[in-house]
Length: 368
Length: 259
Image 1 (cartoon, helix red, strand yellow):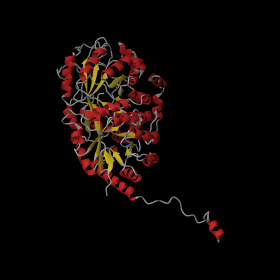
Image 2: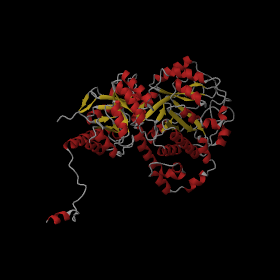
Image 3: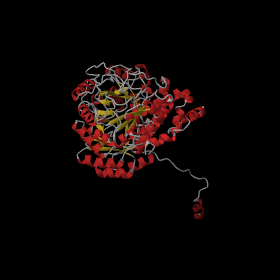
Image 4: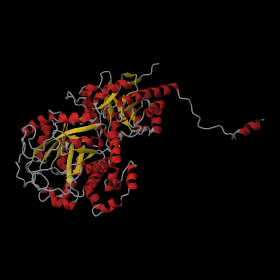
């Protein structure tokens, strides 16, 4: 089995017809339900449901507080390599972009780790570009060995790997996994990924499932919002994918990210601009669809927006982030993968979250 | 009146256990303890940052309170055992609440793995309090495995739905010779009061307190409800008539025949 078959069921589905037919009564009925079907979820993602955004938000807030408490899990990214063999038209690390390429030595990884850990961060996510000949699995394992000294939870967001490679990384100390499908639209995906290993849609689509099979404790997925002009479709498939994984791998914590396209090196024009209102609709619809699913928001989003959505269902936030290789200790000013929007330090973020009546949680895992 | 709850080598006056996972600020903990009178507090080992000066949750837990570390995050017996040993080695004492959850949809506990972990940890001298579904056979096996109490759920964690498993809880209370502590699902003080009236030994609360508008006041309300429920249990609830006396009795003929 694969989520690909679930996706195919909807491949020729007319989302437009469905959305056109949604009535007020249908939205109200869904709002009164505890357990939502895929169709209910799509109803909440419909243009008609925007009228009920406040009701959806109230319910999402209540469910989130019950299941996650008034807490926000904090994390930070560490970019260790920006070598890349892909040509993703929307990404700053695109192999054709003339940026300074760098891969940290293990000593540099340690310097970065010390710098991040000194801010109180205990959950780290390690990122690389897609160049498995340079940022090899062995190299990543060595990095993890260093990071284990400083962090209690280590996630990876790297190129798609085999199940066996995920098992190796798990044994090395990685407990969490993130991978964005970018867009679930297979044809659009093919256009956006001109060359490189990432062109293989199916291999990437099945990567989160391979991570579940490798017994990662936490698996996070997402679509890069704005690539697909029909963002409601990508939001729908993200939720459907999350539910597919959760149903099949009950003991894995499944979460989603809602990354919006940010400015970066290159001249790509997004398929659409996803507004704040759209983002909120996606977030609260997902919360009602998957009450216990995690929702991650990065520093791609601006400070005021991040502060406002804390009460709507977010469970995890990055802080004090740099998307530059060597961006912490070395204060490298080279181009990052994308521009940071919320530039507050970890300390400032901590205070802001507390001010909003929530607790920033720095440690919520024990390496085993 | 001497009505102590005895668990392991401890005698407790309060029958309210509280959690720590969902507060908007850990600084609320001392006040919650004070206002509710709770004497036992559970903390996930995964949440304790022993190295942090500012974010170590243990700094907020008053010394007189019994620490009950829990194995949140464990997906099988092996992981639960590992976490329990780490907790003890880190100085968190020898009480352990076993939570083995391999279901992220409902957060229901895995009874079989819980029994395995209990056997090992009880033999290593831990005071083991396992979190379970209210299943009589699982509970009986936990008694044999050396558990110090059993902690059945009233409803799934974080639902605030009350004593949905009431009939099964009643069976555990009747049949299990260990303290039965209702854990999870309690939403209102009246739910906790009802559990205590039924003869539960104690209740563990987290979500209902943490998600209240005023968590400290709600903690106090739970403290009072639990004390009231316990008193009612000890006082012996009056029986309730389940049937009325019929105006045309079926056995009236017996009197007539005697005449």
